[in-house]
Length: 54
Image 1 (cartoon, helix red, strand yellow):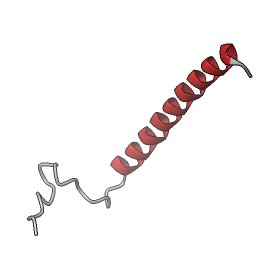
Image 2 (cartoon, helix red, strand yellow):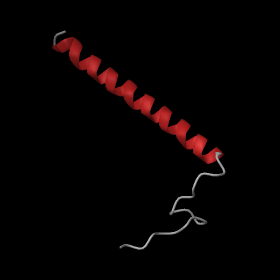
Image 3 (cartoon, rainbow, N blue to C red):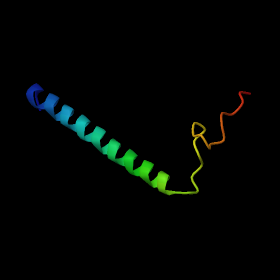
């Protein structure tokens, strides 16, 4: 593979990898939102709040 083929191949691979990670992250977020037993975020209104610094 020379330059004219390498750069577009790397760009396409990077784009596909970014899309794959975004889809995977969205699925994980949806699954966590559907789980009532998941711990609340410390940033949520009804969350545990910030932890004291030790």
